[in-house]
Amino acid sequence: MSVSNILGVKGRNVFTARGTDKIADIVKTLAEKRIGAIVVTDAAGKIEGIVSERDVVKHLAKEGASLLAKPASAIMTRNVKTCSEGDDEQELMTLMTENRIRHLPVVSGGKLAGMVSIGDVVKHRIECIEREADHMKAYIAGAA
Image 1 (cartoon, one colour):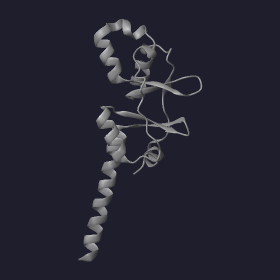
Image 2 (image 1 turned 120 degrees about the vertical axis):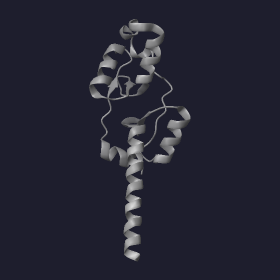
Image 3 (image 1 turned 90 degrees about the horizontal axis):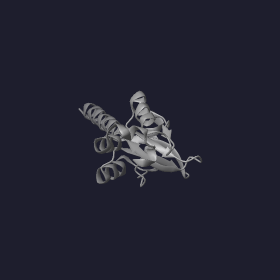
Image 4 (image 1 turned 180 degrees about the vertical axis):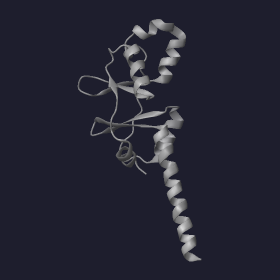
């Protein structure tokens, strides 16, 4: 199944922030929306970075509560790994595993087109395996 299929099921909504947004506001959005990462974009919508729960925890452990008053640009990952709508599950799993990341912004035509998490990939992989098993059961039952 491709990224396009995953986005077709889960939707294309992506929560974004600006590099100047306070980390406290980003933490609030992560908690309220029950998401694990926010893409940081510029005024034109170009990806500048990404802030994940992991980024927040790592920096909070080093800096303490004063971190919350800093801008997202202070902790965001700038070298953002992305994927395209044509990528398949195997490509996503490889990219996520090799880079130890859980979220991949989807870029289409140079623009942010969605976000895929490891949970999305696992969910859709399980659904594919279950469908294959059902087809095999139906085939075996029909051949008997």
